[in-house]
Length: 282
Image 1 (tube, helix red, strand yellow):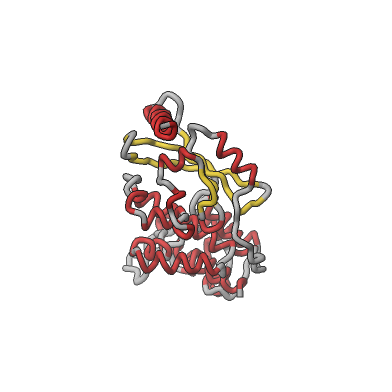
Image 2 (cartoon, rainbow, N blue to C red):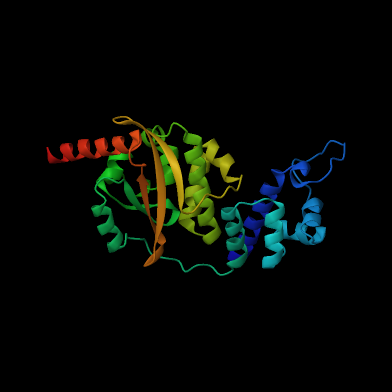
């Protein structure tokens, strides 16, 4: 069951990426005739990857497995990013269902690190972007996670469904699509996770953007990126985020948001910390 799900997801992903490329982008001459379908044809991808059209068609249909060399050739033809290439290999290389795991609790060492990050917003995210722990600065920047019901402590759900969190992002679509792409990685790891399936179904029903972007099969970067945040107290910030994997539990990541020293965003973070500490002390 899990192997079939991975092969189906791989096929859907390859088809989505193929539809985004035009012949001229990969060096193919134009035919002069109007195409009935968007993007490259299967036979064109197969020819460029030096494999048969039948083999590639079966791969997209989830009926074949491919070697690492073939996958690398296809990734090159489709101009996949490093993260997308890793995603393809994840989908093709994991055939066994991961052990169904118990609810997560943040690792003690991550909790201690959170407490030590006095002026840096930080959260511990688990499977499905569930928010397992956070420090005061993260609450000051995003929302008071402690007041939320347990099921609502999920970063992607908040970005789509909480109007206050949604309003923090002046470029909301970029942040939201990145969240969808994070869940795509989760689906590659364990497509039969019932909680993930329920979350995707819920968000697909509640938000048309999520429904459309989920079918786009985009993949998010794993370890770093940037966000623009419009905070109601300290104004606009440009923040760099980084994700550190916990070796004691690789399904947990510590996410931090920092600003380059000397910038207005760095000053705004310090102001936010000062205001929050004053409120807490009072």
